[in-house]
Length: 191
Image 1 (cartoon, helix red, strand yellow):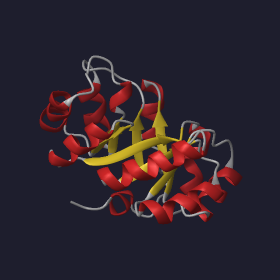
Image 2 (cartoon, helix red, strand yellow):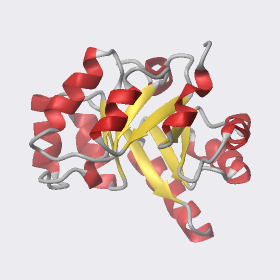
Image 3 (spheres, rainbow, N blue to C red):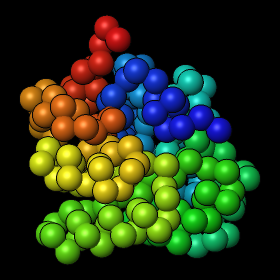
Image 4 (cartoon, helix red, strand yellow):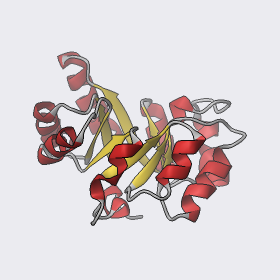
C-alpha cells in the first residue's frame, strides 16, 4: 500500500466536505483527497464510489457518520463493503482496527492545551496512524514541534482562512491542509 504522501501526490490541499454540493465541487477541484465530514450508512457507499469515480482518494470521518457505530464491526464493514482509501477518527481503538483491515488511517487530534499535545503525541506513537490531522490548523510552531516527535505526516485542519494560513502551515512542515472552504481548494492550481 502506498504511503499517504504517495497517495496524495504533489497536491497539498484536501477538501473537507460537509455536504453533497461540496462533494460535487471537490471531485472537480485540484485537491489531493476528500475528507467526508458528513454522511450516514445509507449514502456513504454512494459518496465513496462517486469520489473514486473521479480518482479522488476518499476518507470518511468515522466519528461523524450517522448509523455507523464507532466499533470494530463498523470498521470491518466499511473496509469490506464500502472500501474507502482510509478513515479519519479521533478514536485510537478504531485506528488499530482499520490498520488491520488494510485501510489507511488518519488520527485527528484537537490541540487545545499542552496536555492535549502530549497526550496526542503518546497516542500517535502507540497507534502508528499513517498521518495525523491537527486542529486547529494555523499552529506553525506546534506543527514543527510535534512533527519531529510523532514521526508521521502532519495534516493541518480547522480555522484555515486564507492562502497565508496555508503557506504558513506548509512551511512549518505540514504535508497537507484540510480545508472546508471551496474557494481555497484551488490553492494547488497549476501543480
